[in-house]
Length: 176
Image 1 (cartoon, helix red, strand yellow):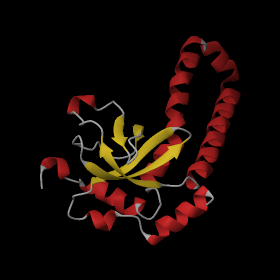
Image 2: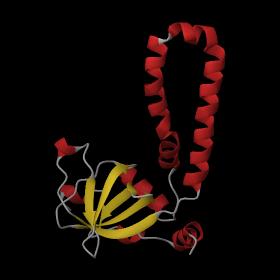
Image 3: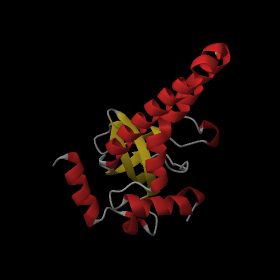
């Protein structure tokens, strides 16, 4: 087994849970709480440039911010609790260099379409161009989020293929 075929223990755990059509608790939590960081960053200028307003209306402003954040979190929690997990066997379109940790992962399906995974909820995979991988992901509008990935020639790959509960969940959640 080469170093690019290595599947780290964290990825193995994700594969075992994703194969049932579920998100791991950390994946679900990351998806649900993602906008909190944006809200926090956007609130910094408000706190820096309008301190008197914050002091005068501080309590009510904080209550409103917490209510808005909780509303966003509740809606996202329900949305991602019902989002179907997709499975595909895809081919690496490019090798992943260490210095490109921030770039999108590009994988190609059987028809030659490129799927760009701009988000990932998994450890950074080491990809080899032209090599095939099993991939679990979610699709939200036209944004693909990588959940877990493993090379198809890995000795334990059969153990990570979709299970019966996966198919049942996928049909229920996708409305098929």
